[in-house]
Length: 318
Length: 121
Ligand SMILES: Cc1cc2nc3c(=O)[nH]c(=O)nc-3n(C[C@H](O)[C@H](O)[C@H](O)COP(=O)(O)OP(=O)(O)OC[C@H]3O[C@@H](n4cnc5c(N)ncnc54)[C@H](O)[C@@H]3O)c2cc1C
Ligand code: HEM
Ligand code: FES
Image 1 (cartoon, rainbow over the protein chains, first blue to last red):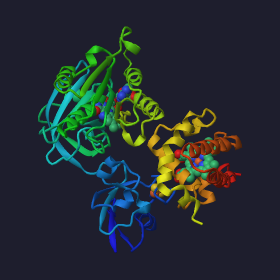
Image 2 (cartoon, rainbow over the protein chains, first blue to last red):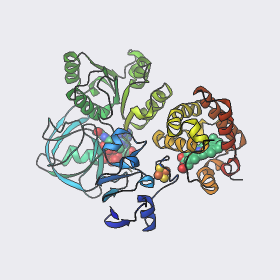
Image 3 (cartoon, helix red, strand yellow):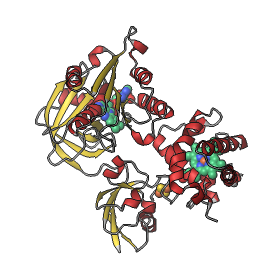
């Protein structure tokens, strides 16, 4: 017999019993539907202990590497501590190192959080108090940077935005939970074409993924499309131009709204027009919900496999 | 004789069919709106559950589960013509994959057998 720990309680698992059966028997209102490993309704994440590989069948490489598994087909041999899929777990204290402008309305926030493990492109939950928690993506690289770097667009009436712009200073404390999200360099072959498309601060995770890919020796072509409302919003463009000049396989394609530009500078239309052959590409999509939804659907209909499309929609907090 | 699911190729066949099928459904104006979920990942997992069932593979769905899963859709107007369209897309998908006509018919019959539950009748 073994156990699972779930939201602070311990549940025994009888021999042959699944994690789902044990949770339901213990009175936990766990979601499920097919009970056969197909529908993914029961998805959970193990943060301690390794779920058996069969219980991860059908999940993406990124999900597997993060400990996701399907409780309805999981018969563990050793103890597991599990979380609901949207639970980012315990938070750590972090110290603000620097807040610097990247454009008119985008800042770069660097914080130090000792022992925080992540992959570039994942996101964290940043909290500046019990009722002020927001998700931000990571542009830094754990092996190159001693800080977590975020690119944050300052919304005029945004609560976290105002807090960052008006109050927060180097030396202040924040809390950070996570990481989460599957927008990172995992399950990509070194020779596979990579397609990175984002708008606004959607560049943050893509920049993280790009750096990670290059550091991992990615050889296939990498095309990065970055959209902004105006030229001024194309932040980091000097760095990105320099990378694309230094690397034969990197192509940086900035698009800013401008009637004279192809497709008026719409990054989605520009990318869709240029990328006709996407069946084998590893695709990363980040930015506003509408952009991500449109690109995901159009690229899928054009032959991209959903397994090859990683995305983060920057949905506003409720 | 081995089961329909085994003859079709089991889970590998479901995996080969699921994206083809989902693309056809999304391109079919008669039914696309039922599947037009923001979250395509969760939608495609449901498609996999559907195909596993239609292929006669392992599943624990009861008639009541099928009623519940489609109740929301019936409220939005799901009817016989939509079930016909889904089965038609299923047939095209299997033919694209080179599945013999006997098995195509068996799959269609299996899907058709839950029609009344799907339509909450
Ligand atoms: C997975 C994920 C990753 C994210 N990564 C990043 C990131 O790397 N960089 C980043 O800048 N943001 C990111 N976001 C968005 C971020 O979490 C906040 O929603 C955003 O910073 C606004 O917070 P706020 O407190 O300033 O505004 P709020 O006080 O939450 O909102 C204030 C007002 O602004 C509106 N608003 C908020 N966001 C938007 C928007 N995107 N477009 C239009 N109107 C909006 C709200 O509807 C509201 O009216 C991410 C979101 C998610 C879910
Ligand atoms: C022909 C017989 C059909 C069978 C055997 C069938 C089977 C299934 C199964 C097994 C699921 C997954 C349920 C779950 O685990 O939550 C499902 C979900 C779904 N089905 Fe069907 N289905 C059929 C017909 C249809 C039709 C005709 C439509 C619409 C045109 C439809 C639309 C959907 C949708 C949208 C979902 C997802 C529901 C959700 O996201 O909650 N199905 N179906
Ligand atoms: S309940 Fe369907 S995958 Fe677990």
